[in-house]
Length: 423
Ligand code: EPZ
Image 1 (cartoon, rainbow, N blue to C red):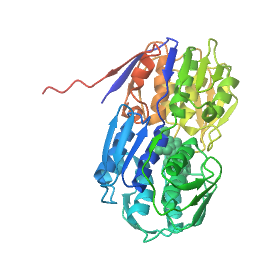
Image 2 (image 1 turned 90 degrees about the vertical axis):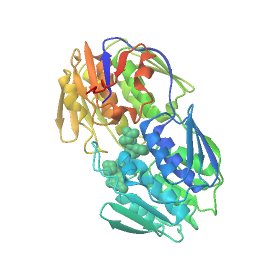
Image 3 (image 1 turned 180 degrees about the horizontal axis):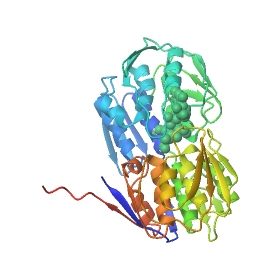
Image 4 (image 1 turned 180 degrees about the vertical axis):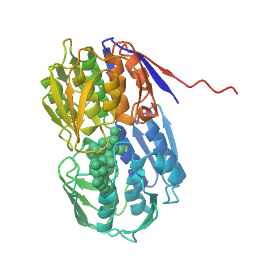
């Protein structure tokens, strides 16, 4: 498998344009099934997860092209509501195809996405939401068959503000009869982007970004052209890499308002951050200061997707920091690898106690999931000596050629492909 080799110790410097948001593009691609015709989506990054979603749409009968960041879909030819199991297993978030397939075909056949390194990833809230809209759900082993002659609007309360469940319900309700309200809805910017896309196709949705979303079902939706928001997690990852290497980096094409909880934490750590429109400048010549307590929670609180990256910055801070992970039960797996690089971290249940050390040392480490992998890259950039990060396919799921991105900022990083076995 590919690996990244990093020569650490060099501050990042320069300017970078942030890619479109993976977690906005994925539900928007799924929602494209709700209209028949040619749909064009701009600022879609080149990622493994996007490739999987496009392959699923092709398997469903759509034509899909992805060139220079623009996806052109022809959804008219979609003819089946059965998502192939091998493709579902490649990307668990394909579960939010249920809503659009159910709304378009009156049926959806998917498979239990199963857990992953970060957690069990349950889908009970998705299924309860679709049932509330009138879907009948049959589970045969790991196969899930949903059927609904006509979806009807309903008042739905989510016991947890699940991002995926909120998106699935929004997409199904867009073509349901009558009004649907989702209370305790997820408030992430990606939900707001999905509302923007659906409304651009003629849906009648209000409230995304708040905890109550109202959807008035319409008869049909019309294809449109739409641009995806910038990726706040990729931007946050670069910001933390700049701080951890004590560099000076300018980020373009950002939405600072989507990063306010991270900016608050980084400023508490003594990092200089200047904001000018969609530009964020990060500078940090001195060692960071410890941050007493950071708790991951649903948006707009501190995001779980930036927990591992910020932890790397805190391993090199003066003092003791505590990070508590409350969203995913398996999202502290990067701690072992960071410890092997010289970090001083102790895990107690779902909390990590991080005591700053003078430096990290390069080592051969393994990415266990997407954001843990990104954190290990940051650790390699900040460490003294050489780091090899293995299993980097996890990282390619969410970062568009991370080595190219970082090399442009002066990092000494290369991707090594496995030598073909010439036996
Ligand atoms: C989305 O996952 C993101 N993925 C994740 O990003 C992100 O970490 C997560 O939201 C939280 O912000 C995409 O948007 C494609 P959830 P999702 O449903 O929708 C529990 C990345 O790194 N839950 O809000 O799966 C679940 O077990 C990825 O880009 C239920 O119990 O997140 C978890 O503990 C990783 N029942 C918590 O809620 C359900 O039916 C958060 O899940 C659904 C979820």
